[in-house]
Image (cartoon, rainbow, N blue to C red; front, side, top):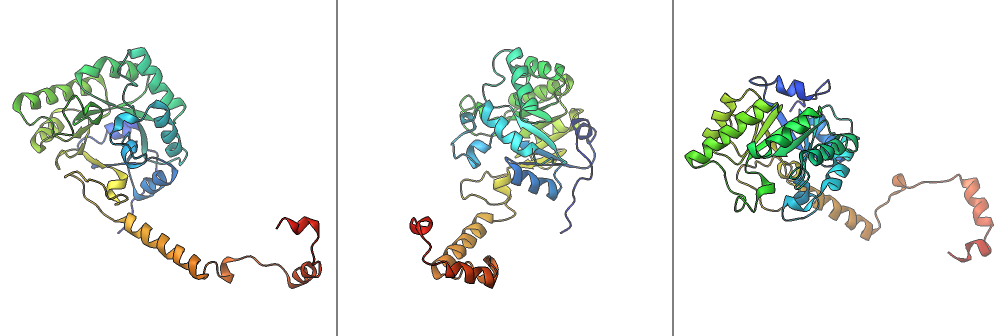
Length: 293
């Protein structure tokens, strides 16, 4: 399979211009190596998602990571200097207070984390905050539908917009976000028809995750796609590898070679000249300097 790698830096305006064009390829990444892999595979957007709480740090939900943690991981991704647009997830409670605080926190994501845009969950309820961040010249990606930071308010990780009025609310939220000036909207856990209507109606690209095939792009979690864990997988996840199995097998082979004494071999060891070795051996006994050994 030919790997397509972006040849120039992807920016928020370039993503906005992709509306109705080539589908947007988005994946999460959480550190330097995963960012490098995503870049080389041809991603358009890298999302430093708060899903790192689950797949990297082992928490049960995304509410457990704070702004400092997100900045730490976003900075690691940014240090890979990837061609994809780097979007940092604004964590729970980093934009739920005053607009001034939200702008300051988004600014930290950019200044300290190297984010080139931020993602904010919620619709019209978060509109003033989103407008404030946009006024600070920080690009914003919206996120509607199943919003994991609202897990308790939504009664769990449930598909949103299944009832007619709830679907209409999502459409209104999407219209409001697009009008406010977000450059894209993630639609998570919504019926296919709802995502299709929103995609046709709004002027900005939509990126689906559990939202059917009619969005302007798709995103999945890095560790889900590559099979780097054996935890629960949502219905919308398609695995393309089982790298956890490969990693376990590789490490087991390494440990076996260590136990048998076949690692390291001569090819994996360093030597010195015979003359230097003979001189060293003539030094025996080595004296006090070697007694500790």
